[in-house]
Image 1 (tube, rainbow, N blue to C red):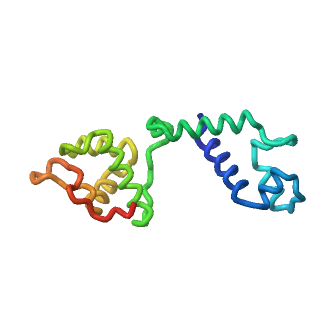
Image 2: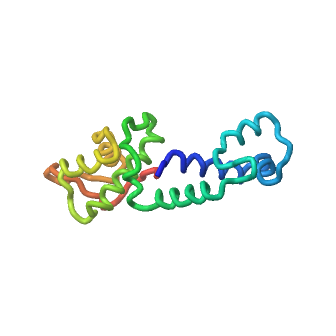
Image 3: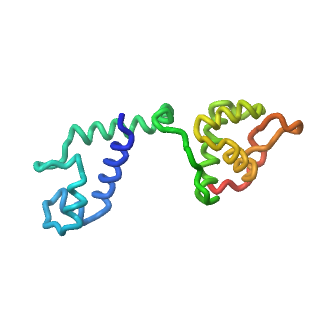
Length: 158
């Protein structure tokens, strides 16, 4: 599965559906200005005789696979977390949520295990872990050796 191509085609299809100009050009064969003609030329699923139905079908299948839990295996780890708190916090929360869905949220998780699990998603483990603590999603055990999901979650902005 080529994830980028599938997502690109999905974005193009959404753009066609959302834009009356593109929709009229693709579906109705309307007259095109240069900008619209250029946009449509980038659509690899649109041939001279209309949409490429098999390619769109494969795109739909790829997008369905991306919704499955195993889709995480299709992506690389996050090499650089966003600098802005508003952009980084939701990513950190999502990563920690996924980690605890897999590890189970009922028991404390030793820091090395938590770090290894977070490292599957992001290179900067400390930033993700610190964000989760600062946002009230995680708390350290009394002895400081492990983390658990907070009993009373704070605001996560997610």
